[in-house]
Image (cartoon, rainbow, N blue to C red; front, top):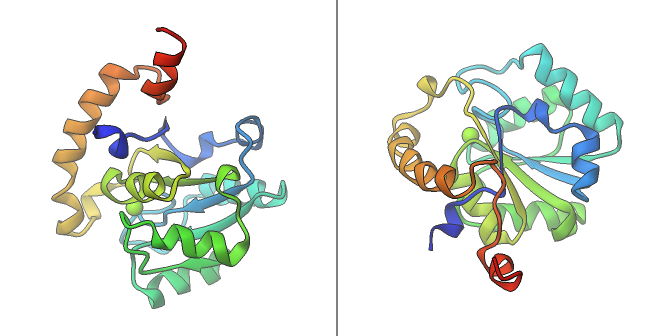
Length: 182
Ligand SMILES: [Mg+2]
C-alpha cells in the first residue's frame, strides 16, 4: 500500500543524475520539480553547480520540462530565466501535470522520469502517472510555505519504512521479487 509513496530512486541532489546514469536507465526525458529541487523556495537564482548540471543535461540532448505546483507567473519567470518549458499549477500528487507535459512534448512513459523533493507531491504524481521517480533531498526546506512543511513529518515516517526495506535507495518491486522466488 505504501508503494505509491515509495520513490524508485533516492538521490541527494539532481547533480547526481549524470548523462551516463540516465542513459543506463533508458531515460531520455525529465520532469523537474522547481522549488527545493532545483533552487531554494524563496529565491529565483540557482546555485552554480545546478546551473552547470542543467547545461550539461540539456547539451547532451535530454529533454526537460519543469513541473511545479507553483503559480504560473512565478514559475514562468523562472522557466524563462533558465530557458526551459514548464507546466505550472500541476496539482501534484495528481498525475495530470505529468500527463500534460508528456503529451505536449511527446515524452514516452518508459523513457520519462520525475525528479522532486516531496513524496506527497512529486513521487506520488509520478507513481500515479506510471513513470519512474527520483526523490531528492530538499534544498533549504526551512523556507517552504507552512502547507509543505506540514507534510514533512509524514514523509519521515514513510522514509523510515523505505530505508529499512530498500537500504540502497533503490526500490525493488515486491512482485518481481516474488517472481524470482526471493
Ligand atoms: Mg519541491
